[in-house]
Length: 229
Image 1 (cartoon, rainbow, N blue to C red):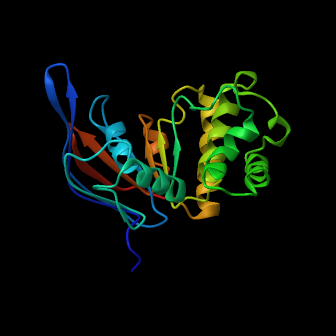
Image 2 (image 1 turned 90 degrees about the vertical axis):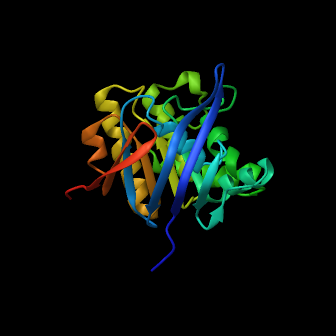
């Protein structure tokens, strides 16, 4: 049996606020198999986004261990974590996080250029074609609709062919029809590439599209189980 893409053991994570440390995650245990799609649901403030940030190496664990794509994140410095993300993880945010002064093509090529890939622009162009945006490659984010911006963000997340996609409310800023189109594209790319997916969402219908749903409440995971196919 292949190693899990995600393996978390007794993860605790506290953030420092004005009144001192605030416990966000309280003893998370989680395994996600390679190629598996998992949705994470729960109320606002339950710790969903913090869990995603920890998996991306953007928030350090207070205690416990995090292993993603064969890499143990605990104790890695910022440079090592940046290399880990470039090699293994694609992230899709609710608010797109595109660089406004770069074209769609340049935004998608950016992670490849950071890793020194001489074919960055060619691969970025192919990724935009896969998302139906070849004709918009020279446009800046401000010249694109919300749905187009999120499709650029999907192209950027998948262009490095990561083992894991982390998606945080990717339809949260989109209308229903546009959100459905974007999610159809996300799952299509996931299936084509065989990429693992951890999807945070408030949309129960969207959550059911994943193979498994887990619920987070007060910083703890409560399994909802396997979704019907």
